Image 1 (cartoon, rainbow, N blue to C red):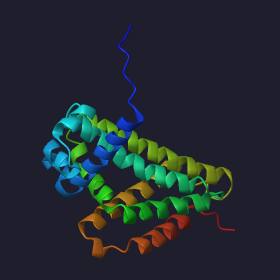
Image 2 (cartoon, rainbow, N blue to C red; image 1 turned 60 degrees about the horizontal axis):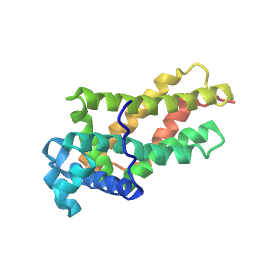
Image 3 (tube, rainbow, N blue to C red; image 1 turned 120 degrees about the horizontal axis):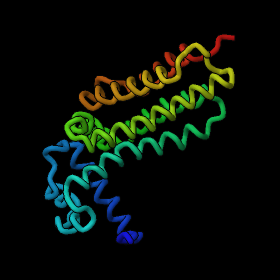
Length: 205
């Protein structure tokens, strides 16, 4: 028989989330490589012992940070997209809600940008990234394919390619915005990207 893992209590789950949120704040300004457990403990105003009670080491904590960096915006976006009835509106909302999340969560987005280069240096972290990107890409593919089946979108546009183009554009503008916030007008960018994507996808009546 295997050893049963003790299920964390509600308080422990809340504390774990608080630690992850604090770690993301530290990473957003220092990057993953320079962030230490001591830095996170200091910002959280706790001892490092509190951190290692919930996470066995820095690697485990930062792996959980990476998951949170992807999962939080995904949940925010999916909730808004799934409320839309028309597929053209789902695509519009996907783009706009991603931009809304960026504007409202700059530190989170900065930490995500830091993660892009760091993920490729470690096989485990790269696997986490691939899994999350695949999940996002497949979600977009389903929207495009749904619009094609419903007759809203052009059948000749490959759904995987369109999904990749949308993701690449959003991640690209994310990096530019973090590097120079004043140089990027995110609301205008969202409007233009929606226009471009609709121009490729929408069936002309």
